[in-house]
Length: 464
Image (cartoon, rainbow, N blue to C red; front, side):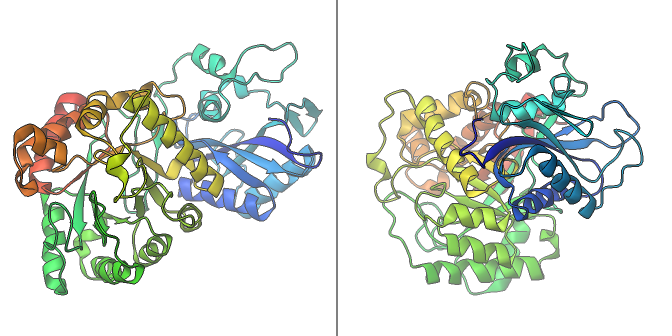
């Protein structure tokens, strides 16, 4: 929390909203801070929390952001209050409903007292909805209260459990329910794979067509079978695949996305994901109607990808991979174990994503089954998926995607050489993924895997 230089300061701002489109309001507040030269360095997740003090109001969406500013404390307060007013905040009841709430929690390690502002915020240590997101950013720092020696994380653990427990939320779009990765009764989302390629390992050429009526039938079948997300890809990333040109990838995916959005009413509440590692493809796909950017390289294969993700404001899937599809099969050494090493490398990509301006509440993680991993690593991830969610500091609260469908290791175990015939083996991996806490399952066999997920949700999550 030390300032970068004499004129630059680090502050932590609490974010809250319980009126209207809560996530959009918080995101707009972050954009307004940026416009006011208050640089948002990092954000926490967003948590849906019950109101405190004044209870007769809607649940809040709460988070915390770390900012860099040259403003002095009262100047910062004036700027934040101006943003609140511009975004329509009207204070009618003390601690009552508000469209946006921006509170200064910390400013460097200063203690600041004024009749308009006290830093550290006097009530912060009694508020779970403040400490929980703050502990994602600085869990082991000590609050700069006089004579104080306890970390924020210790304070959070000492608080009585709130009722109900705050739920971490990942926003996708207005028409799609948020992912609630800490809700034990959340249903698993089925992501249908729509490969518009001639050479994918399992279904190459199956969906590559210029006949939009065929595409319409395919998408409708996916939705009828239970898919809530459709992942559209225009280039195979199977091991050893040969990249296609950017223009060819665009020619494959953009017309499909536009057609789904314009001509298939049943898809209005379905999220579209663009499966690409190219920034230009991602940006044009989002402009055409995609809601999610799914990058198998987590921004490593195109230096413009992370800034593009931030600029679009869309939700993103960051997958663990090493090298490229043509080299990853040689990069399978994990000296500290696959869970520890994948976690470390994903944390590095998270840091890069946050530095580029991607909000934490927009990020979904994928451990990358089959990508720079052999069968023992894939099986360990399936067996120990929950460790990513509970044992690795910095990976808590994220939703996870698992893509085990028809993978090579299933063929090795079962002796089924033809990928399209690995449905039974895939069913076992889908069940294991849900038992381990996956929020999204990416599959080819939508109808069958929806049934598997439905039963697994009932067993492991009590979803009836």
